[in-house]
Structure formats: structure tokens, C-alpha cells
Amino acid sequence: MDDLMKNVRLFAVVSIFCAMVFFSLSPLASALDRQPSSDYHARREKLAAKLDGGVALVFAPPEAEGPNALTAIAPTTIFIT
Image 1 (cartoon, rainbow, N blue to C red):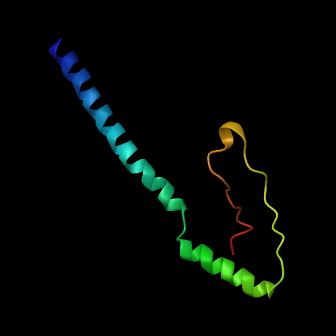
Image 2 (image 1 turned 120 degrees about the vertical axis):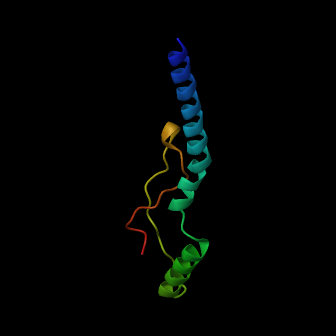
Image 3 (image 1 turned 45 degrees about the horizontal axis):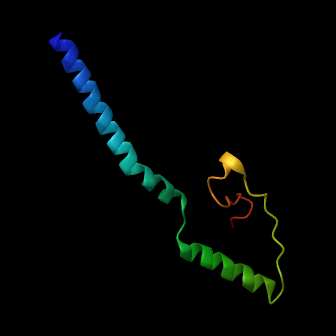
């Protein structure tokens, strides 16, 4: 009976530790996807220089609805230069 209690206690401690590690590192995962704002600014400046005062019409897929709407807009690789 003592061995069973030790195993249950060990499992509980390991589970809590894994949950703490997961929840403390999960915000860092979204930071890996984001580029610095200076990259976006440089890209906009480059596009504005190519337009020479003109207008750009940019097509994008519609926004996700319902449970798929986790992020506002996810650009495709076609848009990234």
C-alpha cells in the first residue's frame, strides 16, 4: 500500500511540475511567430516607394468566424516579401 501511495504522490508531483512548465512557457510560443515591428514598417515603406503616390489594392482571405477566429489576420506566404 505504501508503494501505491508513493507512486500516486510522485505522479501528482510530476503532473503539477509539467503543467507549471507548460503554462509558463506557452506565452513564449506566440512570441516566436511575431516579427519585429521594424520589419513590418520597412515592408510598408518599400511598398509605398514602389507605388510612387499610387494606390495598392490588396486581396486577403476572409476572416475566420466562430471557434476558428483565434487570431485577427494570418498573412499567407504570398504577401511576405
